[in-house]
Length: 67
Image 1 (tube, rainbow, N blue to C red):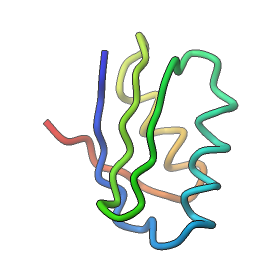
Image 2 (cartoon, helix red, strand yellow):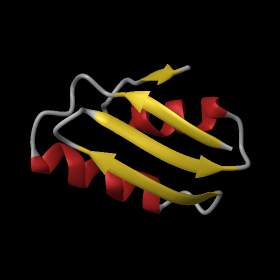
Image 3 (cartoon, rainbow, N blue to C red):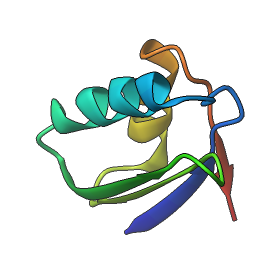
């Protein structure tokens, strides 16, 4: 599944790197893209979207899935 999230608290390259590092640690995520200008994160995984939301929340960046 492909999911996209709004991450309004992502405001700089440091934020982007923190999110990338958090997503890299999760082996169940096959691909991801962190788009700083649009404040969006795009993820490919077979896991439920809640897993990604939890990872982002724990990294300090609450996210809202885009439907």
